[in-house]
Image (cartoon, rainbow, N blue to C red):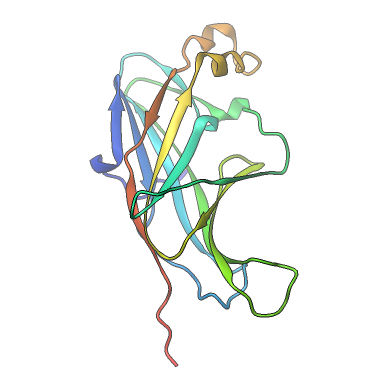
Length: 198
């Protein structure tokens, strides 16, 4: 777990629970287009939860979804990829005691992807943001271009989702799972191409 840039502007508090967006860098310099897909810019994205109540709560990292918008507030729908069926594991549930915090982060990758990978000739490339969120699942955002964007996370746990945790923790602990929906504040970032000299 890694902690990146953090401030009060990144956080929202609901019923004594503080949810915060973590972003390691707000300026991303992506490789030039003619480089291979293996060349990428890494940035740490994630969130932190602080329990400011007097009650211990379980939080599930499986329930967070990133949301990205353009500078003119257009939503970018993520693609979903998986190497298998994604289900919560016991390690996704974290008991957070009063006054304590728990942080989750992943190294996302920003890179240029060939539109037609099997064709070797010169071609256009798409700007992609690739973000793992479990060991087998990934979000993939197709970004229109370099420029300014904003990101936030949605955390949502329903009573129905809690019932699905009954094989992970005992029934008494199920009562301690925090239930609700929260959106962390949008955090701005900028993607730029490096300046090249001839």
